[in-house]
Image (cartoon, rainbow, N blue to C red; front, side, top):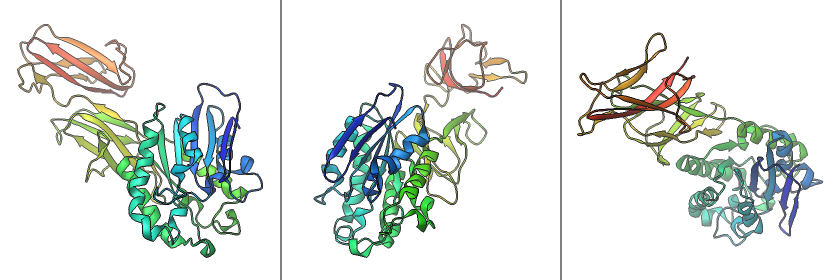
Length: 367
């Protein structure tokens, strides 16, 4: 365990060991399921502790769970008011996992404050995203929890709380960890209160989280095709069971196919549902589309100005007839200039310039 900043309802414990500056900091934000309520030793048995072991070298996981806390701000004992929330931000994580919503479901809270839940959840995502460390913020669907003596009923979690969390995640392009599906049908993973995981359950939670944190999805682009001659086609890799595309961090209504015909420049992302049996989702890094069609300096379209690879794999240019003084510049996706003769498989940006025109575009090298 490289670091543990554990918080109960009563105190905050800070015990930080020496870590590598290159470690990815993971902040586990949540309620008693994160804290480790009811475990013999939350410090050693909670899911964040076991997540740290599973992720291994290169990660530093810290527990910012606090028992009995809600996401809804209007409730007097909300997570927002806790020192753990301030500590999680001061930690400057690279990854945040939010596990909140179980306590919001209580029948003396949800019926009266549910209208605030989605806005408060979205606000917490934004609060972490604006940190200097620019973390990737994951949200989790709540596992089964049913305890009448605590005014907590699983039907509310299943039918109202989790759908609200998923709706916020899709609007905010946040990746989703489906703890509910992952823990379904495993009564032996729970304590007798039918709410909190036991040590085995906490380990299984950690496995679910670790398995998703180590997955990724990316966007690929192809040259314009007949169905989209004035733009580029984006696709995600690997494919999944459902998709939602975004431009400039705004959800594109109806853009739910595995590919996207791009008609506007901008920054694109895609949220991918990983399988048919889970609501877990991955979100790609932003993919910048800087130019769609080449245009002349006088504003006229120059459709023939392009860069391509011929059948032998040799780099070729196609420019308007009679154009002289043509130059070609190439950059990789990291913005580094590359030599025209040293292309390896990947995606490149190009700029063709000549007398009277300039053309920007993308080039895909597959071999």
